[in-house]
Length: 68
Image (cartoon, rainbow, N blue to C red; front, top):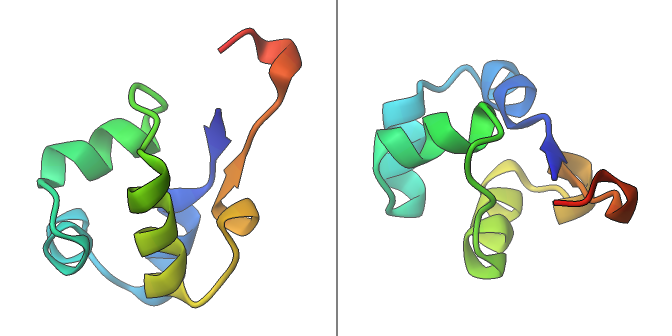
């Protein structure tokens, strides 16, 4: 799954640690999502979208052809 979480975070001018605290996960989790090493749960994806006041699809893109 592709994501542009880092872009949204930069636009909001928040650090990984600040975002992590807001959505109740570790900074390492935010880092892993941004690097594409971890796909968030649906609940976390909703929390992130809620935080940025956008749709999940604005942050995450799923392409079944990727095989992920």
